[in-house]
Image (cartoon, rainbow, N blue to C red):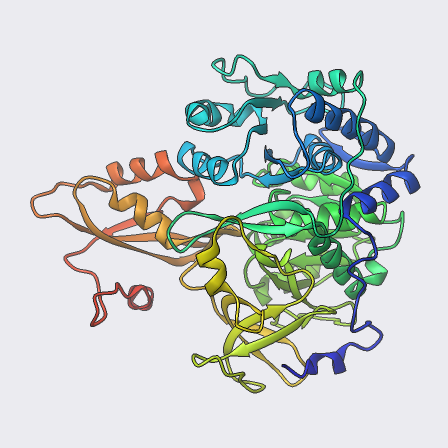
Length: 544
């Protein structure tokens, strides 16, 4: 058992939170919708929904899910949406119906989507119009029975021009039609407790296939309370404005930007395409946010943008960063314009996600991920599973009310993912200093982070290896000015094979989301291997 020596640095922060402050996320959402009924909850594309609008429309959609789609408590509902007004409406409807939301990246290819839908056993999907061709390509190979399609303005009453729905999805309902029909049906309230499942958050697997982290209502309530304990003055009831440019299908944005801010009556401006920096700056100018959350690459792009000074930053209280290490020069540049340094945290899908964060009392860049949050125990273990001392590196192992129950239908993975005394093994290596600040010194296995998205080399290698003429391949991350890291693939050809870079990239592009596709491919005569024949990715990284 660790000494939790970081608590000496807590000051006024409580060492423990009440993970049962709300009996479920439903109760938390309902309290906010009652208390802040007349306040703006979400804005997008010039449209606004109040907390009362969100309550009314999500109840109607929940009735549709129950009475038309046949969703029962515990059923999985896939949600494949960018940051549109429809995302929070759908999430709240799924929770009201007692369902389990399966977050799906709308950039996924058919191969990735098919695996996730079948692994989760999904029969109902809410999907962005622009992603319907991907769904159409695999729907016959899944258990999907109900499809609800979403246009850019859906939920607001506005019609905003966007992509067409794939015409082969003939029996799909539009979201406005589903809400209108649901409004004529009786919604049957569902009894939900903290132990019930709420989210399947898919994360990369060592086999190359992603697996679903099982997150309960209590996991998320706990992490909301933990984050609020660290940031009390940043989360004042009815006073906050947040701009959400990172995707809500990521657990960090879902927990911090959506659920935590919703619980205190914040006004949330949703940004569907953060790559359009000019449009994002227009939103920031209109919103004058008190809270902004981003990944390092987004901060870097904004910090270098000449129009950043047009934004009125006088209300900004928190700039939070996660997904990859915050770089000091980026934080400094951001602070020089906004007056706010970037406060870094650490977490994983499996931990709902926040494990550590730089608390409110931190008044500048620390180069660390801060202190473990309340009610959380972190042990750093060496190769023999012995706890290491302050200043020594060890695998970060976490126990707390925000830690997942396990992976969905993966008993073998669950057996190896936890220590004998119940700590989740993150696979990341960290070091504690004397104050309890946690620094990440080595990354989870060989994971690559491209613009804040996790790329698992095994998945890239598995797909590339299936291309005719590829004998072996290995994939590593290399520094990239625009995306932080980029994917580089080393390939050996089979004897006599004529594999070209263009053909192999096209093959990868057809089977993987764009951010996973190798940016460069290098053909080599041989790959470095250990004495037992294991490819040594570290040598390839060091050689770069």
